[in-house]
Length: 300
Image 1: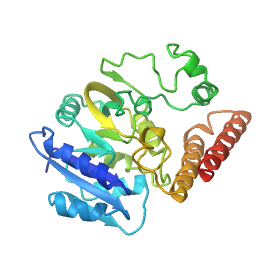
Image 2 (image 1 turned 60 degrees about the vertical axis):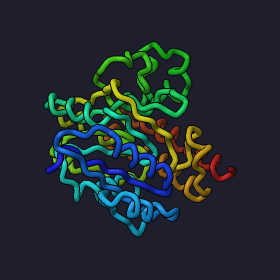
Image 3 (image 1 turned 180 degrees about the vertical axis):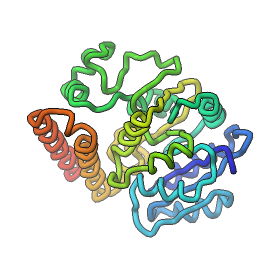
């Protein structure tokens, strides 16, 4: 058994995946070693051939269809042998210590269910989606209305991204992103893995919610850095628009799935907690936002 199994779900990000795998080769490894598992979701850009040719030690699972992020990760963990799992996006590059230090942290803190690191864009900006509160109706209202941006240092109005926290210190957080999520394999199995009802987007928030429900902490560990190009597979993010432009069909589908994910999460965890009128407002707001998001990608 190895210390760490790294699961990467890939979809048409051949060059970025190559860079990611190369960075893993060069990174410091835990004493018990690592294994790398790439689940390729029916890429058409030569990703599978590249992995097979350049990285023979990587376990490649080649799917004939696009399984989505959750199902792809579950296929990877089905063959993983590590004591800890790292779910890593293909559009990341890890730094020298970014595998070793989080593993050590988990080994020393049995009450921690997941840990992430300092994710940054190529321009040096911190990735805000990797440090979030749960999207309660109030937190979401403040975020989408702009109150969070107007009062970034006020915990009352910035529960969504919690930008008022001290990002130089290790601290507990509600939600981290599936772009870099490390956790004990035993807890992953206990929770039943990723919820495959989600295709793309929202599944990491769902998983974090279940980790908290199980009584474990989620930790933001800022002492190592990982580069994140952000959204290369989906095409929905401006951060990676200059390096990845998926076809319109892909972008529209992902836009629809992102909206469906918001509904799924709310209905699964919040619908029974709030009055019907609140639920009606929330679901209507999600639907309206989704209509504009899909329209944007239909027209570009």
